[in-house]
Length: 179
Image 1 (spheres, rainbow, N blue to C red):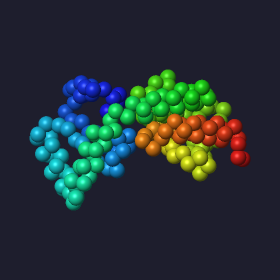
Image 2 (cartoon, one colour; image 1 turned 30 degrees about the vertical axis):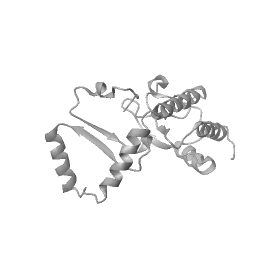
Image 3 (cartoon, rainbow, N blue to C red; image 1 turned 90 degrees about the vertical axis):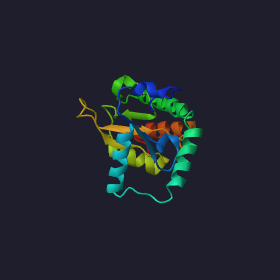
């Protein structure tokens, strides 16, 4: 999906297939959509069945995915704005941001400031335990193999108050609070 635009398919010219996850930002409990030419879809269906991918009651799952597509696509822009806000605040706090802090979706990758006196795993664990904020660590990027990035994802379950709680928690933990 990337940026939410009316004619998003323009971004994918030249691709032979597109897979869109309906959970995560769109809020469906599960499911995805696979788009491609007829022969590609035929082969994908066959591969799915070979791997035990048949599903009973698939209509219920399809209905949830359809609801997500019809009702939640436009609100993705809110997630993207919250992600940008989070990235900007983290940058101001001294966190390392890839791509000069540019955030295009609901995902924010960041690394601890050089002078941080805490590990990535400890920050993630304490944020979850003390603030109910779930983020993940252990990500790397090509060319940045020596940097251990943390990933935060904004979604339907993260409102403006959640962003504030996240920033408050990170600031408190980094300052040595609660030790």
